Amino acid sequence: MDGHGHRPRHGGSGVTPDDARAILRANDRGGYCVPTARLYPFQWNWDSAFVALGWGSFDEPRAWQEITSLLKGQWDDGMIPQIVFHAPSDDYFPGPDVWGIARTPPTSGITQPPVLATAAHRLWTHARDRALADAQAAAVYPSLLRNHRWWQAARDPERRGLVATLHPWETGMDNSPAWDAALARVPTETVTPIRRRDTAHVDASMRPRGAEYQRFIHLVDLFRDAGWDAARMLAVSPFRVADIATNAILLRAERDLLALAARFGTAAEQAEIGARIDRLDAALERLWRDDLGLYAAMDLTTHAVIPIGISAGFLPLFAGHAPARAATLAATLARWAGRAGRVVPSTDPAFPAFEPRRYWRGPVWAVVNWMIAGGFAAAGDAATAARIRADTLALIDAAGASEYFDPTTGDGIGGADFSWTASIYLLWQDGTPA
Ligand code: GLC
Image 1 (cartoon, rainbow, N blue to C red):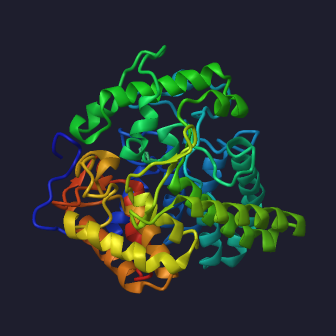
Image 2 (cartoon, rainbow, N blue to C red):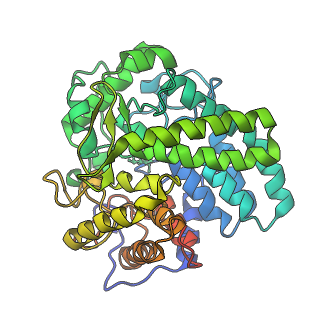
Image 3 (spheres, protein in one colour):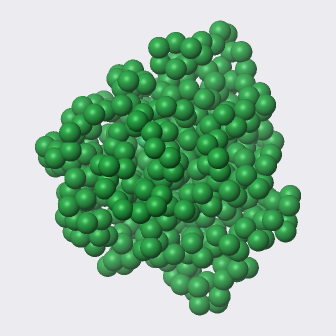
């Protein structure tokens, strides 16, 4: 291991499916996986959706357990938190004491991209054990429905179509340059003393900067003062963006929930989900940018589109939105590939904000690649999907199941032996795009 928790690898030693399964087993804390040991010692929301799919390739009961463990953190109002603190750990800040949420198990008070219904639906449709899948899907369907109702009630109460994210951590793309302008409006003062733990585990040059971190915690302080009440949080937050990833993933998740509702729900529920799908599908159109050849996020405080190219801009294809744009999006991706070397960099490499080694400002993330490839495949562009899959597998083969990868050098950086990266490796073994 080097100072950053990585095993040195020489000349592409190769990862095998057995290695990937061993990572999931090693990160299993009893019914749920931590994203990686030490750096992230609890259960994370969207990580676990992908991890459930990884388990699904070889242990279906354990796959469903990953989902039911996450749902133990679901709030009464339907929100599924970003983090469930199943067991104490000193390795992470901010822990349960900072969030100050009195429930068991303790959780954080914000959410993350809603991949869960898509994961449950895929486990159900790909099941080898049909009886297990039917029973488990029937059991989780009501929780998923409550969660999608929460997204609308809490984050789009006026029913304009796009849901708001109130913290960069909710987007799952914590320090994306797309959030810079909105985050600059958030003060850096915090009530909570900051005790960063991440930079003890990973080199600071690969993590968010200090001022960003203070703003992240300022928002946590503000929401805690608002009593974690959804309407008050939406009203007081100085950070309010319509993230493309969250909205595209929600649209895809609604379509997957509709398929589950056809089997496990009522006609009224199907109609309700169908209405939300129509509204969100129409609203995503507002995020298309001809000049970028890409979708872009929107600042819901100023109502301005955020003109920064980020990898999430390809995700509406994953939601089945406007498949006719696949060729334009493929041309954009080819331009990015020409500059960065490997796809898909998290930020357009032509942008000044592009930093190939800093977290969400440039590195490649396997889970995002899997969704983008799935979108291209569904839209009929098998070649682009295959290119993304090949790049991802080559990166993992050469550098291990790292948290993220430098697109210009192929280095694996951030935390090592990451659960969701191992899961994508397993998912892509059979040659299917997504
Ligand atoms: C970071 C990532 C987020 C992920 C979490 C655990 O916060 O930005 O997307 O869910 O780590 O892996």
